[in-house]
Image 1 (cartoon, helix red, strand yellow):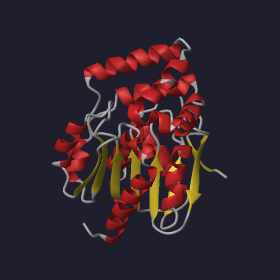
Image 2 (image 1 turned 120 degrees about the vertical axis):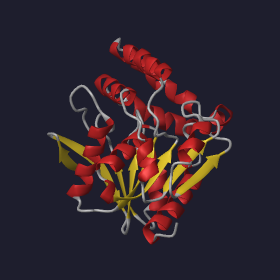
Image 3 (image 1 turned 90 degrees about the vertical axis):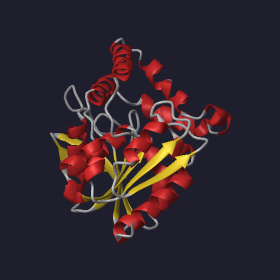
Image 4 (image 1 turned 60 degrees about the vertical axis):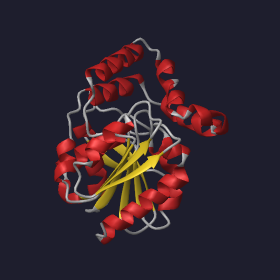
Length: 268
């Protein structure tokens, strides 16, 4: 059963599972808290796991006509404040990673660890912004199916025949996202700023989970970001792409669990 917190006159939905130190899970574009179900099962054995439907996704309505990463971060804070938790490890996949970085900038005192899954602190390139504009135009013309079909391309092609059920699950979640929410999120990602300075000045550990075959986030760009961090950790998924955290959910959960233990025990 989902719970909710009030934020800007909407109900931000979230799941709250397990007991102990808190891990916050933030999904990517066209996702929802349901993306994390396998991770929640494993992580909640040792931690309290909060998985949030970001505005415009899952069962949380869109807010206005533009979803900045800062606003998404504020919605996350509203949830965490409503349940009275003050320190946590924040894990974000893709757009969730952009949100996590915005959160770390706005609320550094609440973060004791940051995990970026197939994500980056760098802003969109001009070429990427043009790609986003093309997708926005598709959405405005009502061609949402063409957008959700992109989901398939984010998985590793060699594994598709073995993970059809997983791909279908992720696409089903994506197809529930409204046209306005798609536009709002794309505009927000397109206009997000660089947050590499967050990496440079953070006094807590940062974990990068990287897919070597990621078609959206260049794996090579991650190494320059790792060099900025005081306490960097990296997991390189040699055979996975942008959805590696879901293709290899058990491995990902184990890595997040180990990382969270380091953060909470100050062993880094």
